[in-house]
Length: 263
Image (tube, rainbow, N blue to C red; front, side, top):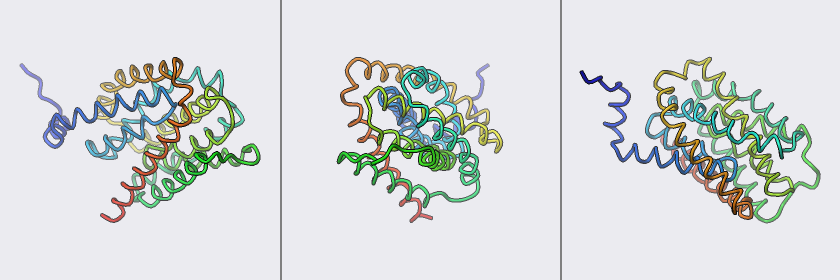
């Protein structure tokens, strides 16, 4: 006797078709490679696609679970090279603010927060692309504030990376050091997301099945991205990271404006 497919699988295939499945898989493959190469970007590629296909209340917890294995996968690099005085305050800020962001996700439309964050990210990308760096080393309050902003966005929209990534890239240093700082800061994202998602009951059986299905693909492509960085990608790291931030900022701004006008 054939087992009947779960209702959500039937509904997804009926709405998205196999083309939608291919789009989801493609987003996971590209997102994993980008994550391995520049240390961030997977959720910013996959969450919008997952949201279109599955809705935000499934997309965000699925993306958080998918990010856990790749966090463990890349963490040795962060531990070896990252600057703890920069990374630790940002991570703590993420943990403090993520529950508030998750409350916003389940309670309040978040389009205007996304617009503000996207504009801030694009401004920082424009400044850094022209060679700007802070006149003084960023202290604990500035790093903690960047973590707070990222935690709010992570809880609200599942894409909290840009504020801490932009902060990490504003520091001088070798590609290895900057990438490790990015990975260290980004490691807090899935970790700070899980407790509030559990609290609000958003990690369901459906979400677990999706995550467990996708995790092997993302782990494999993350490994390929990290290998590319080690082999010949370090010379292109900063430029690639700024381009990724710019694309993410523009896309986030566009979707947020669209949603605000539609609402």
